[in-house]
Amino acid sequence: MLNLDTHMVVALLEGELSIAEHDLLANEQLGISDIVLWELAKLIQLGKLELDLDDAGFQEFLRHCTIFPITIDIA
Image 1 (tube, rainbow, N blue to C red):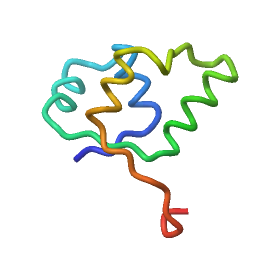
Image 2: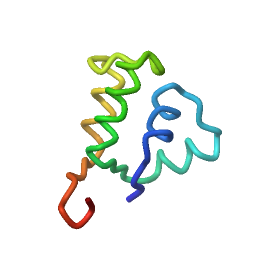
Image 3: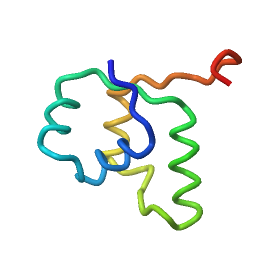
Image 4: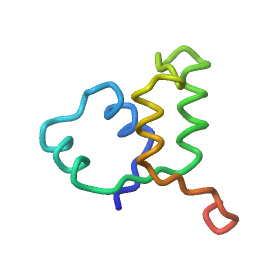
């Protein structure tokens, strides 16, 4: 499983991955920390990212992605 950071999620959703990166992600199960969702929302709120969280592509990404909660050990 690949645990993606916010930068990689944005690149994936905006179609900005290289062919090699896209091929790698296409063949792996993906995961994100739940803080990535907060970071995306904050970037949108600050006007640094234009992303519709209700978009079908984003919702599809979430359905196929494991979301890891922050635990006290991680914090």
